[in-house]
Length: 297
Image (cartoon, rainbow, N blue to C red; front, side):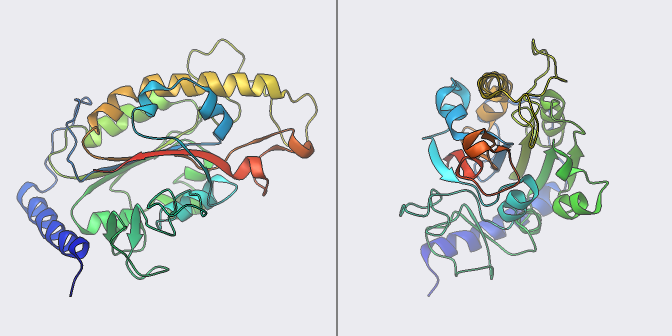
C-alpha cells in the first residue's frame, strides 16, 4: 500500500501536470513580491566557497530567517563535484545526525526515484529523471538557474552537461554579478503562478572575495593555492563583507519564497593556511566544512 507521502506525491504530480496544461508557460514575471511564490516551489542557493566560520560569524538577517544554521560537510571539495551531486539529490549534510535533510542519508530534500537507496516518508520531493532539474521539468515546474563560477559555463562541454536541463539558464561569466543574476531569475520565475525550481550559484564568496562596489581592489587576491603573500585575516574580512552584501541582495527573493521550500548552503569552503594549505580542490576539513540552512513547507 502506498505511504501517505507517496499518495501526496502522486496527487501533487497530477495537480502539477494539470496546472501546466492549464497555464502552459504563461506566468507573471516581475519583482519578488513577499510570499508570492507557489508553496510547492523550491529555491536552492549555493554560496560558492563560503566557509562555515565566515557564515557563523557574519550578520546575515535575511538568510538567518530561513532557518537554523547547520555545520555540515559538502559532497565534494570543488564546485562541479558538489553541484553534480546536489543535482541528483545529494546535498551537504551531517552523517552523524538522524534528522531529515540535515542528514541526506536519513531523509533527502529531493530524491531521484531509482537512485541510491529507496525513498522513505522522510523525503520532501520524490522525482524521476536524469537530474532533479529534469525531474522537476517532468512534473510541470518552471526551472530556472544561473551560475557564477566557470564550472557553470554552458559554452563548455562540462558546464553544458551540468546545466542542460534548465528551461531558463544564464551563466554570469564572473563571480561578482549577483544583482544581474537576481534580475534574470526575477524575469523568468518572479510571480509565477505554478511551482518553480529556482537555482542560484552565488560567486561573491569565491576568490577573489569581491562584490560590486567593494572598497578593495579586485585584482589583489589574498587566497591562492601555492602562492606567496596570502593573507588569512584579510581573506576572512573580505569573504565576510561579501556575505553581508549577498544577504542584503537576497532579501527580496527570500521573502518571495517565504511560504515555499528553501535551502541555502555552501558547495565547499576554502583553506586559509591550515596545515599550509590554501583555497580548495582537495580534501581538507576546512574545504569540506560548509554552512547550510533550510525551510520546508
